[in-house]
Length: 310
Image (cartoon, rainbow, N blue to C red):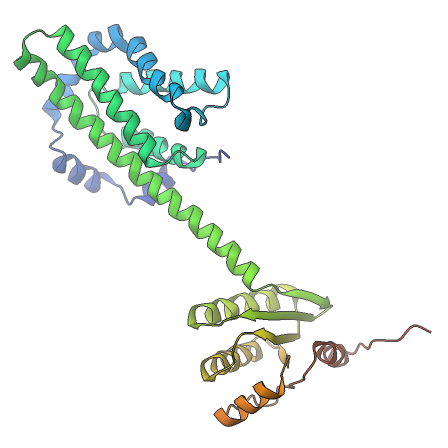
């Protein structure tokens, strides 16, 4: 699914690109002002071959099953061809400033947004360079002259590809980060039992990273919901050892700082014995065997109670 792309400044911030970084990259690619001036003198060549280059370029993309799927309809194809014509002419504009760079970064972010992986992008631009090579060597019969014309174009296209891939990677990392955050929320589901009462059922193993995530999410939800009691049910925790116990103690202590109290449920005889053997001190925290008992106690703590229907 295509997503809206961030503004130009955000794109540059993603890859930490400013005037100094631009100069460093250009120096690494040996892309000099003289190269850009030479390309600017080829504007008539570009105008002559623009349509042919674009059509040949998309003949590969639209003829291959893996890449054809990125262009769902004729409107999308017409749009990308128009953009490719604009890009082609920019290669011969004689400039490589931050505005130019921002356009290249949008290419990479756009490819990530539609799900086009770098292997298809790189493969397509291998074909792109091949087309340009053939056009240049056809128009400039002298091999030495043709090579001199092709060299700066190769530099600039490779420079553009590096920017697009950097933008792709940065956008992809942001996407992964959002997915991980969503998974963390799923692995720490906090339910609202009643006004000011929340329930956190812990399931599976708890390591240091997950424990920190649990604490962060718990504190955030307590403040958001103005909750005063959190029931922590550990019936689904794979194993309770000193590490898990220490994490629970830290979370409970942090809860007190935001004015909330904890109730620990799901305490089996084995877990109770383990906590006793380890000398774990949960302080004044109520510990109960069953979740239902914890809910009843939590409601009492906030001045509510469960009434049985007649």
